[in-house]
Length: 142
Image (cartoon, rainbow, N blue to C red; front, side, top):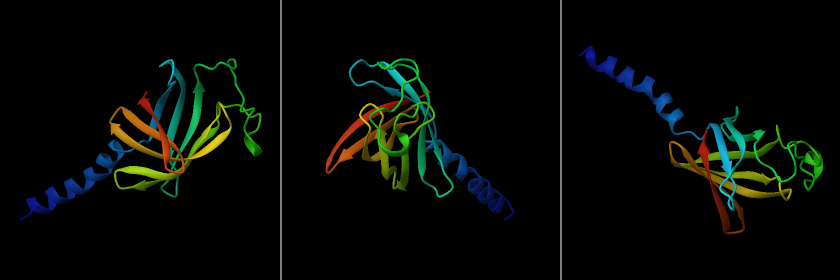
């Protein structure tokens, strides 16, 4: 009888590790749709309210020089460096994906409704949507 509670406790303790392995949290390489080149590294983290947020930690390739700014953005992001900028926010857990968030495209300064889904442990499908039309990029885990 004592073995059952120990086994049950061990199973409960392993749940956070399984959940972490299935989370989009971590560093991701964004890939240019046209060239296939890695454009940037985005770090996705879970914030205190349980939502996901993504920040550009490094710009690797830009047609606007080594330290591009978001010159087409409006508001507080206008002319701010893209490195260090939060471009993904408020993604909420929704079954086996994350949805209800917003993503910023620093190339055009526009924001879109967003969702994300782990394709496997090393690939994340990130979508920006207008109405019912969504465009997905596949990011690769760094």
